[in-house]
Image (cartoon, rainbow, N blue to C red; front, side, top):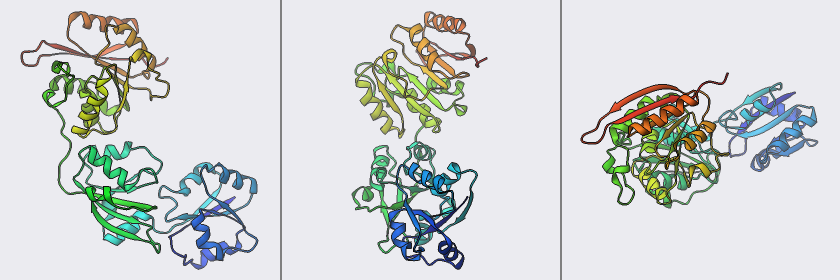
Length: 396
């Protein structure tokens, strides 16, 4: 089976002789509605057309059942987050040929004469904000953004402004390569008010060198009402996260997150991490959200309620957990964490007393956790804190 994927722009195609010959010899074709409008006059009279719509299982079935060669029309470059990648994955035994056109970000770069090779591409087309947030927190200076009908330039700009990332300008384009093409340069504040049309994409470029602050003094966080001392002290917080070696971890749970100081610091210092914050107090949800916005830490998932009662089946399993609070039920909370924690994962705990230190240590011994770090730290006039880190054994 051969699948040839031809990239086209949003204008009537000016096909090369090779492309025309392939089309005239073809029988089975696929593409979006707009593609069909653009290429219909070039198709043979007895051809069969399949509209590409979600879910794509209909297209896969049609290709499989035909037992014949196909020509698929795509927008721009089919390998640029496009149908080409999908078809290669679904039909690994097929002979696939790609005949690309310029992709949308290339066209937009041409309009503004931008050195697009220096821009990191991030797609939000049917994707989460994980990679985008990581790029923002890391201080990425230049990004090319692919959008969809949910993650629009307006909603993306609003989110950036909510988290204090106002130091970018936007190079915007819609319907690129077509008769309704529009391009302009916008501030993020202007982008929130702009009348956008689909399809679109844009570039972001920083206008200054500002990056999020790391190593945040505890007095800068919004505290729980009347309980400012419940925030983990900055030196303790940074030392704990350092001893956890989070650069090699993927999913971080903060159990007993309180005001979110540990979650936020973990997110800012390790932006690749997926951070999940668990806290029993209802008022902590708003406090964590406000602190996250104040310190430019998007992407923290917050779960409010009794940790032991929470349904965790749909939450990504952690390979690193910080135990910040346990409500007098250390063994029960640790037992539950043990069930969630991936093999080889770690638990960190800051002990304020010999009793809590012994409780954590004895639980680790009973459950065959290997203590990897123990450090006694004293800050100013406060009582010394023992930082403990233990690792769950690998599966035998």
